[in-house]
Each structure stands twice: as structure tokens, then as C-alpha cells.
Image 1 (cartoon, rainbow, N blue to C red):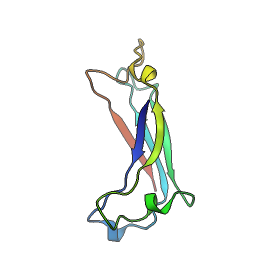
Image 2 (image 1 turned 180 degrees about the horizontal axis):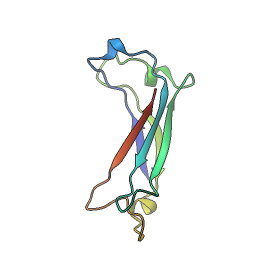
Image 3 (image 1 turned 120 degrees about the horizontal axis):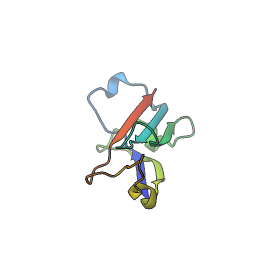
Image 4 (image 1 turned 45 degrees about the horizontal axis):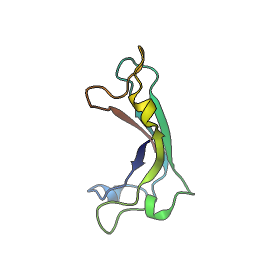
Length: 100
């Protein structure tokens, strides 16, 4: 399986953000043959998200990751059909949609 995790990082705009982070992040693995059959998963930061994941990074550069250990199987990742191919020329393309 390919895993997918989001990590908060310390940044220059942290003083302008609201903490702890709340929102929905949709991670999309793009089909490189057509604009359909993409593979996606939502990663939610809400009141149940552990503080060490969603709070402002104060020590070090990154927080602990939050996401999915089994985002897509190796079989599905390497599968090629006439309408869908995720891995092409040793490259994967992702899109991240943020709703805060």
C-alpha cells in the first residue's frame, strides 16, 4: 500500500492562523490518462484530532502526521486500463483540496 499523511510545518504565517487547525483536506491521486477515475481520500482535522497533530508547531519543524496508512494498494497503483493509469513514466500526480 501507498500511505498518505499530512504534516503541519512551522511557517512564517503561523501567527495569522487559528489553532488548533480545523478543516477537511481531500487528497486526490490523479488519473494520468483522463479526467475521471481519480483516487481520493479525505483527511479531517476536527475536535477528535489529537493535539500533537493539529496544534501549532512550536518545537522542531513538523508535527506528527495525520492520514491513511492504506491510501491505495500496490496492485491498484500499478494497474493500467484503457481509461486509467496512476503511475506513468515513474511519476504520480496529486491534488490537495483544502476546506478550512
